[in-house]
Image (cartoon, rainbow, N blue to C red):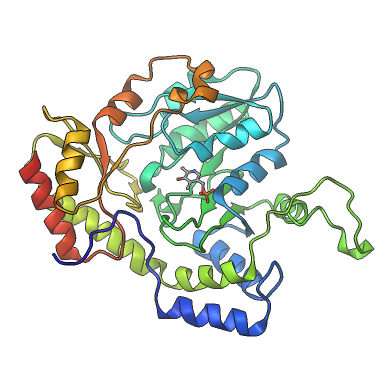
Length: 365
Ligand SMILES: *Cc1c(COP(=O)(O)O)cnc(C)c1O
């Protein structure tokens, strides 16, 4: 128990050092170099899409997905009301309107019934977020997507390696977003990926993020482009982390199991639930606690024992730029926010640390 317990710290080792040194020695540290295509190809193969396009962040991935679909002023995009702010900000960058819907009280994910109610003639996309790694009800969402002809963009930034009906998250939508921020399942320091089976869209995004440069004509730019390219340095780190991904996923899933086994008889605790045909990545094991103590009291008592925890994301409509988009009381989302907690899930932790957290949590409650 002497080791520091970490919530979501990255797991970096010798392989990462080896690839980084190789990258530095090659002098290709910027936006060209062999690690970039190799990382994209291996990532696409792992997830199971035809293409993967690397970008600077998960936020840039979501932004480019929306941009590629031509979303702009007057268009509505449906999103869950509890998520990280980066799921929503790209909608605003484009001048479009976020439409917030409530989540399911058990899985904490966007509820397809609520999505269907929120559809109007202006709805141009749906962004389901696989919260904390837990896959959404993709059967329900794909049904609605087909019925109304509205594309899905999966926010799979927290769910790399998670599956639904045996298929990876990030393969269902027309364009999907991953993140390699330092706190995610694997990291490139900072970075993101767009996955898709649409070759044309992949090519177009690849062109746009490189300043929309038509290299066959030198420095010629037929469209307004962006500089959202991943660097070779980042891709070298990504490749090393991808090789270790199964190790990380196995550990995260084992952590969730240890928490469940040790806390199953605590009636105040309810774990975020997977759909029957889904397997979460358990990026962060998350629970609801129904006790007389407030969540912040529980947090500070755990902190005294050296155990870091985090509150669930604040419902987005609480934030000043988004208050005007509140269209309901979002009962389930607020209850999850009031009573929910993320538990230490960094793969740097040992199994004994996770057991210790479970024991102490029991004592505190
Ligand atoms: C991390 C995250 C993002 C954004 O990823 P960045 O790489 O940090 O830009 C988007 N959505 C969700 C749900 C996230 O957790």
